[in-house]
Length: 208
Image (tube, rainbow, N blue to C red):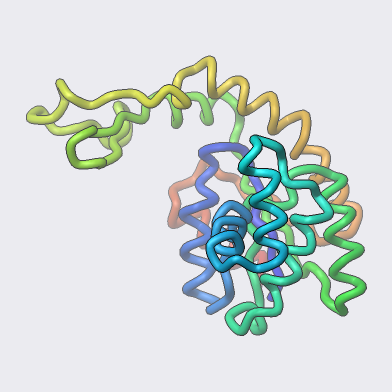
């Protein structure tokens, strides 16, 4: 099974990716983790990516595609994979599609976990972290206990202004891949407003 998981920030992709990885015993490929692993291993592509990242540049799409294909050759991805965080743009989606075709592979499903902007803002701006323990709380859904409530903090990238910037980037860059995969007939749209368990059940149903 070859699956791509997409959705706005705080749509629950990380939670669902962990469940799908265990359920189907497929490789969960996060591009951030993949880049770090390639650089740590000192592979030729990893070294090339490090040259860009060390100078604050974005890793070119062509190189990321090569890294993804290299990652897909590893043993744990032979039975299937779940791509998380890539593709981020329509250009990346088109390039990935072409590269997979050349490698004799294809995407079986693109799971789009849809959550409205208002909910994304509520989920992210309500987050608070405990600087002493690293525990994450939410003012509405998982309030910090009284004994730590005075010391929890809000991260800089969890402010409303920062969230709106991330959402704007998502709408401008990532949303255009949705019609691309819809036209290919592989897009599976999921309501991300349900409970995590209900979202999991809906994803399993469409993948079945």
